[in-house]
Length: 357
Ligand code: SF4
Image 1: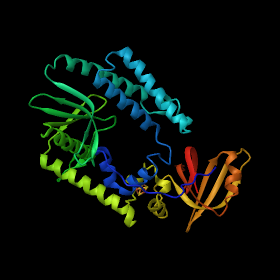
Image 2: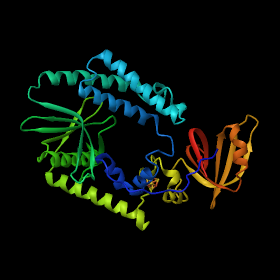
Image 3: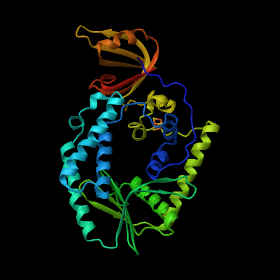
Image 4: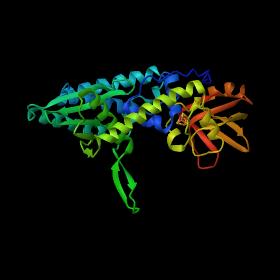
């Protein structure tokens, strides 16, 4: 069965989390589509994202002291992996199971994660008078911005907000002289400044330190000003307001680009993206009307699409797809998650490929 998007019923976004803010800033329409589809993606999420959920959950449990030794760790880790695999099965993405075989650096990340065990245990024993709170919910007084902070470490004088990241925290940037240096990603800085503001609204004072910790236990801390946190908070609220207003005015703000759309899981429902695809061939997606469908002796099926002056060939569909595709000649379809072949305008279907009409 070909997938259909159906009528999109936009719904007001009641609140956003600091981690959603950056995504909304890049493309507000994506946040509206996510809300309209109740955060159920229209394309398969990468298996790395499911494993990322496992890693994050483990970091949280270690921080809480729930898993404090290696035996506990191994048991809980396996349980969490199983849980995500169940999740994948339910969504029909069996092809990502077992995660261990489908995720890059599975073993290495597990080893890195284990190193956090010792870290927390050491800290807890030497930390009289210091309060650790993990996965603590903070929200603004107007409840428009809210989220869970991974770890807050506080004593009488100081408070540190820590966010765990399972991927790279820094990226290379160019300074004013054109020199390359490594800096914390701007989206993470903004996210933490928003958390700092939420902490302030709850406690009446700002945290003294904002930090990010990666899987290798490297800690990155950056300077911030209270005024910056205030400004980001106001910006986030304003963005939420204008995004919600765009539902009634139907003046949607979308920002199609390679960086924004490449990993957007709502591409099939995005008219802005589909329009963009007409002139940009950098994506692994194609859209056009079916002009021919051919079944070869080995059972493989190829589809030929036309869009304006461009013609696309998509090979390697399984035999069972033939009738449906052949019956859809002249219909406009979009095919997502393809592999680009060496020849221009030639693609092949892979296990995560999805067709929408
Ligand atoms: S596909 Fe691109 S333009 Fe469309 S919602 Fe997603 S990020 Fe925005």
